[in-house]
Amino acid sequence: MLCLMLGTTARAQHLMLGLGDAKVEAGLNFGPTFFLGDLGGKVGKGTTFIKDLNYQLTKLMKGAFISVYPNEWMGVRIAGQYTYVEGIDSIISTNGVDELWRKQRNMDFKSNMWEAYAAIEFFPTMYLMRNEEDYDPRFRPYIFGGLGMFHFNPKGSLKDQNGNITWHDLQPLHTEGQGFPQYPDKKNYKLTQMNIPFGGGFKYIISDKVNLGLELLYRKTFTDYIDDVSTTYIDGNDFYANLPAADAAIAYRISDKTIGLVTPGVGRYSSGTQRGNPNNNDAYFSFLFKLGIRFGDRGYGNGGGGYGGSGYGGRSRSSMRCPVRF
Image (cartoon, rainbow, N blue to C red; front, top):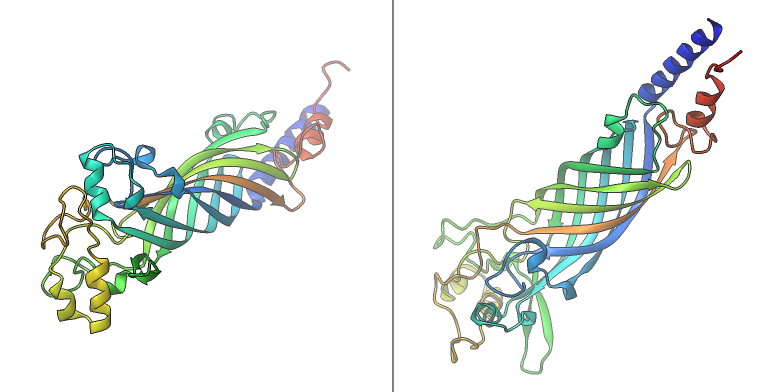
């Protein structure tokens, strides 16, 4: 009877501690980041996700996160990260006419990328085994999704007669006529916008306080202008009608840098010619390596303990268990 009462009390205490004391984890992450937009791409007309990546344009993302875990199967994450992205038509392979059309467009861009987001993490195996006190695995897969904000500022290049390259902010140049009265259907785009981060990964517990992880983080955005390319070319004279003379001269040159690969002798495209594909918004994704550290007296485990009986999850379960025989 005494053992039964002690065991019941221990399990109740275990449950209250797990629900009452949220666990806090903080850490760093870094890894390769890839941009998916109108510029650059692989063979053919262009496709989606990894089939259309220019791997030579891979960039490094780095950031930090804080996660709060009310229990072992769900967490709330806040994260902030930085990287930059770019796209270049000139590096496209010339396997066929589809590639040559994009190479003839001859556009490029680069942009810093800052982002912050909040997300819910869900650990399915921990949820399914949530009532099993002895289930305390080192390997823990998870999925997550949330809401975020990111800031970008696309820049394009111009080369002078001596081969010197200068970079210019593209959004103020209205390269596709955004905001011009001649194109009422083209609206100005904002440099700070919302996105939806989601993905999945796993964490591996290496000690009572420390874990390592690998994660795929994809961002769905609501803009096609991260690379400043989306719809059609405009009449170059409209730049001079709407912008200061110095800006208009830059916009006239940088909005259309066509070189005659498919159509020899072409200098500029006529207004209304396709410049990008507005049917697919831009996106970017990362493979992140993560280092997480839990703070406070309680580490990993359903009861807050460690491995090998070194914490609450190990010691208390064994010390409060009634013997099989007296």
